[in-house]
Length: 571
Image 1 (cartoon, helix red, strand yellow):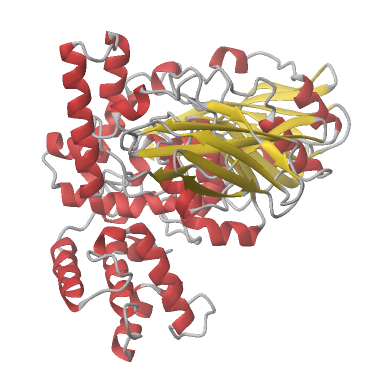
Image 2 (tube, rainbow, N blue to C red):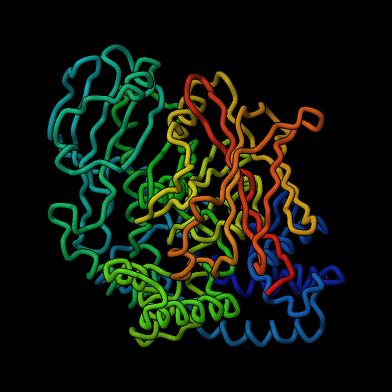
């Protein structure tokens, strides 16, 4: 998507909604949409078809459901007029365009040739700007050959290079075809010859390379201390996605990939799979969206959805703020036991914290509306589910493992209900700074199972199941079915009552009770897994999900049923 078009996403959304309510767009509106947003013409015939309108309508209504005030799935004249007023207001607040920066103070950015909003394909692929420095030449290490280099990920801004080490590992004989890549490597360890894990040794034996680089907080990288403050000053001045940690983390993996393929006597093109947790789960997912050389990601405690809470929807945020207020008032009076360290963590990372985008805008003296425009520009470009159709057309493979109590991947309920095709494994009570549930599987090997299947095939992984439920007096009856692909050999269900709004402090604090789980039973007549839960008296709602396991190609693989909320009609 050309950058001159991407910054007008909100106006594009308004136009789409206006033409997709009860009638199709007239020729004048269609022409204007195609002029500003040629990417909507998916078949390239120069016309906006009814089918293209319908696709756009579904996408935008999913992103901004609050626009449909009466919830009827169609826009009334009043709603249309309100949208037009919002569009007029926001049109006067244009986010900074990196191309408009003063050429005497910034490095000019080339126009991207891809559909990327925030990355430049030429910059990613340009070997000449790697400015590679060899720290260790190719040399044998056990059954491998290894090389340690340092590359320039980018001239982030004029005079500020971002140089990072990369360790390349290939089999002792022959070229590696593709590779597994991660930035989850301590700097000191990266400087030393690597001893592959048992699983990495199997990848190498199968002709798959290993690329290790360094995606960490700046304070953990030698020579990068203080860089985050410089980055934030530039970001708040320009609202340029380039000046975010997400940009530089993802760019690190993409540029390391360019560096690996530059070693054409040791690597040949093949599959490229990223994996890791937190920033090392986010960065390969973003790289998968923007770099077609990437073919898979296994991402733990990383975001996947542009949910209403993540987009700071006013109604959702009001619920979160109220929940946070009530929670910390209870902590203050002693009704909730919370140690000071966890209290500090929650205040720093919870939705609605001082580090939220709206709070940052207030401190920087920028209009909150301007920050929302930036969010609408950025988030759809970095969430896999917002790019799902295009990713599936490329044939990529994805596994997300968010945990049920995480402050990064907090929108598990909304995501499960709105994007059920995304393969997900929920670690019960899992997340940053959390302790998993006592009944969590101890033998889970999802990452190894995923990577083995991606590179070598063999037995198929489990496909996302469906679930149904029925409230029968004081019991909840649940049924989970794997309608496609192989069947699991185990099932275990967890549930939690009256959970607080997603991402709030109580959402993070209150765990699934140690007794709120059960093994499910296999029903051979229906080919499904079943469970009956005795409901807690007085509960207003209950959330549940189940995990199902199977050994695949020698590795224990688990997949979850959709995280589901059931309203019980009680208070």
